[in-house]
Image (cartoon, rainbow, N blue to C red):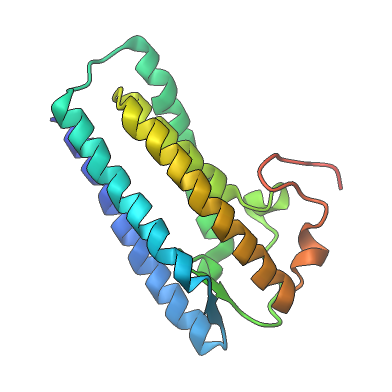
Length: 185
């Protein structure tokens, strides 16, 4: 029972984030922003929805057991949640689940964005791997890590190109790695 409560809590968190993203999208479009990468967005939605469907099915078919080592993915997941809050709050109204660009805007370089270009994507990668590992949902962990990697490879390229085209992205991020922190200035 606790497994389902935990999973549904994470689903509820994602629904709240989508509502926040929709409000941010509306605000950015009012400022002159526009969407890029609309074609691939449906694949992101499908991957994330099917991730939770798969996870729920897998824990139902093969109920998880508690193992001491389950604490390790749980800890990674909790740390990822803390970093998620840091990344999203660092972007403020510029955070979105879609790629909305605002021509002429200065790219936010605060919080974890000071160290790497895509902390939120690194967090999502961690979550999609650690959440199923906590509950021994190994099929979900492997399949959706691969699918998420595929969709992110498309998304990141489109997002970076759009930001290069209309913002100061290159000035801010040419010296930062995509996912590996680099602290030299």
